Amino acid sequence: MRVEIKNYLDGFADREAALKMIADVDETAFGEGFSEEERASPIFGVIDDDRTFLAWEADQVVGVSANFSLDVSVPGGSVPTAGVSFIGVRPTHRRRGVMSAMLDNLHVDGLSRDEPIAALWAADPAIYPRFGYGRASRLLRTEINRAHGDLSDAPVDESLRLRMVESGDDFPFTQPIYSAERAARSGVPAVDERWHARQTWDPLSSRDGASTLYTVMAEDDTGVRGFMRYNVKPDWTAAHDDGKFQIYRMMSRDPAAHAALWRYALTFDLMTKVSWFNGPIDDPIHLWLTYPRHATRQIEDALYVRILDLQSAMTARTLSDECDVVIEVTDHRFPDNAGRWRIAGGPSGTTCDRTKDPVDVALDVRLIGDAYLGDASFREFARAGWIDESRPGATSKLDAALRTDTPPYCPFVF
Ligand SMILES: CC(C)(COP(=O)(O)OP(=O)(O)OC[C@H]1O[C@@H](n2cnc3c(N)ncnc32)[C@H](O)[C@@H]1OP(=O)(O)O)[C@@H](O)C(=O)NCCC(=O)NCCS
Image (cartoon, rainbow, N blue to C red; front, side, top):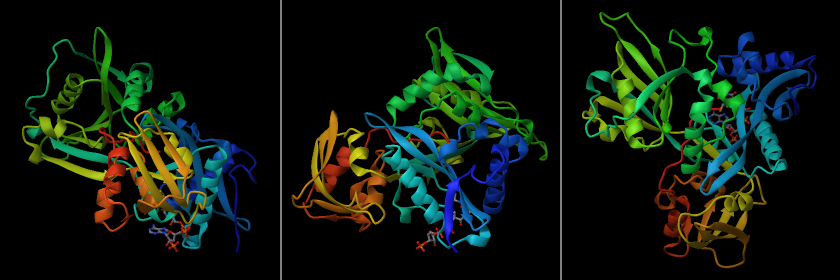
């Protein structure tokens, strides 16, 4: 039977009925849906009614999908991005092409709004590479045993003071730091007050025994120099206090402010562990810890990127080094991207034009998604047998051009 993708409001009496359907489908797909309280909350405040879809088979809704309208930082600027989310298919209708049809629709929707890339967080890393998504950024998952949380040679600045607010109120203080991070790193989506409300919405019912979300700021007479959003989850089931200090976001302008925030977490009474599920892979904590072996440090795939419009995507970012390389791209879903392109330019700008010149490197569009934000190595791809180099040295040139000194980082899951 044919699957039809429609706007999520089509066929429903009102928005609440349509949102309830999204919640129902996602509950069957993920095992957890959205309560009535959540459906009326800022979680849904960022959804774009024009970009949220249901998949119907006859009179049955079998899948849900949505694009958020994001703006993601890239080297030298930022790029409008289709933020793919909510993907779920009823278990009764899996492996029949429902998700494929939904993704095709989201990609066309992105292209129709001049978004040269799509980006997503994958619940399962096996799903998206076949659709041309590359692993464009990584995250650092850290857990530190507070008993071994001594820091060595971490900078100290006596002029720094700490101040706490509830996270829902931190937007005016934290936004300048967030914007500075966006300017310094690729992969960081812009956050407005709606996104801030979504990320700090924190009702008692969803805390799982933890405190409310607090933001502690490190500041001096010049203003806020860093902030950490966290909650604490007490646990008295052991013979001693066994709580957990959970970091949700930490960003700082300078190392001394960053060290002050880490010290705050690592000296918090009654907590035995400090965890951060999504930190940047270059966070200096492992350099400062006196006993790094007692900390868990795991690097995982984070943001996935799919190049929808190669020419616009490439010209939207700068290159780290001068480059003039001809690539032959395969793209089974978007033939407009396929074929031969000359990538040229440097730190002041990039050109990406059709050419008939001899090919230097042949590769799949997925690998450009992998490398787009600056965190992949074409030489590694060559070692993996994923690319063909016809001009010796061209792979190294691409590496030097696309890689960035500061690794990309997406601070939140969407
Ligand atoms: C993942 C999910 C959306 C896939 O939906 P679906 O309609 O079954 O997917 P399709 O039939 O369009 O599959 C397309 C291709 O992806 C593959 N695929 C689908 N789900 C996969 C998975 N979980 N792991 C690996 N491959 C997967 C299919 O085998 C198929 O491959 P093929 O093109 O080689 O035949 C669905 O299984 C689901 O809702 N899972 C639970 C929720 C979830 O994980 N959502 C993703 C959130 S990021």
